Image (cartoon, rainbow, N blue to C red; front, side, top):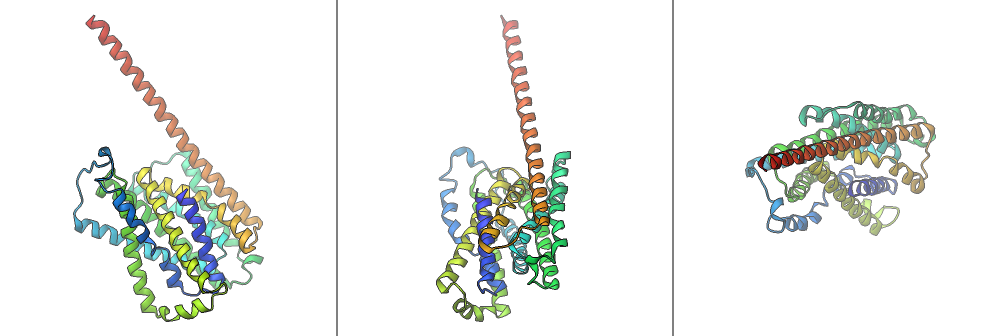
Length: 339
């Protein structure tokens, strides 16, 4: 629920920022990471002294140097991805942007195979192929009524930036799962909030440096005064976007911690039909035939992936029952012999 709600609200508010007169790409990028302070209370809430004993099993606590390198690397990845997604969201309609972002799943699957030992079954392969087709299909509809006000060059830039951001995001998800497995090795949920806070903090520092280096910070006051809905609406938009992205971040990191990076990505893909529908309702965007086909392919791909998880779960339960049955038989046999 955190992934779906946070992603949908943040994407809509991010697009609204540009529609109502926002122009600062650095500011639009900053709000994607700057909401991390709201997660600090949860770090203390889930500290080892507050959590049950069985959640405190840590094989070996990583050194401070290792943690700094890990969070810095992920923070830089996040800052770069956020900037690429900002360009994509600025130059593309929100529904097109959301559907192209589905290519993250294909990239994540590729990296998961090499970094996380992800196994591919026919259903998972079918899911990835469908979701990839779903996103790339949209490049052929740039001359539609919806994109008539966007130049061909800006559309291509937006498309390339969104695909590049999706590739980087897919790699970052796989690295995050690898970090949980090989470095952090903790069963305490505190590591989820540590990961969320510290990588967002590093990313925010990098984006702030870019904001001041570019000189865009000088235009913030003027941008606020010129915002169509007023200054209060401008601030509410930025704050709401920052909070929504943090909700999304802690959701996707939590799913990686509990299951896998690929599963986390699939849940994010489930939000694909949500944003275009909201965009039609709030922004009067059009759902043409290409987007409808793309959406159906995305849903089909998602269902295929979930069905594979259902089969895996069914197999595990069957194996568990067989093991328990064998154990009971062995106990019964031992009891008879002793008698």
